[in-house]
Image (cartoon, rainbow, N blue to C red; front, side, top):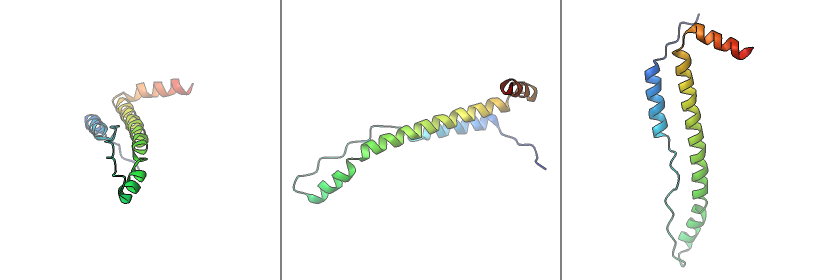
Length: 97
């Protein structure tokens, strides 16, 4: 038998806001320095790192979208949990009609 589930709405709001503010979503990574032309190791390293900027920006966009999705889901959950059962039942009935 399942016991009742309790979620502290204010704690969920705080956790969601804290997580969203900590999500690494900052773009524009610092540029890599220019290698000296006669240093083959630096040239090879810079060739590998040249793709980092585009990769970083793609990851930032993905993180930002996922952080926003989680935030929306959490606030939707808070709305559901803070609404009466009767109101939620009416909304479910309305949406399924």
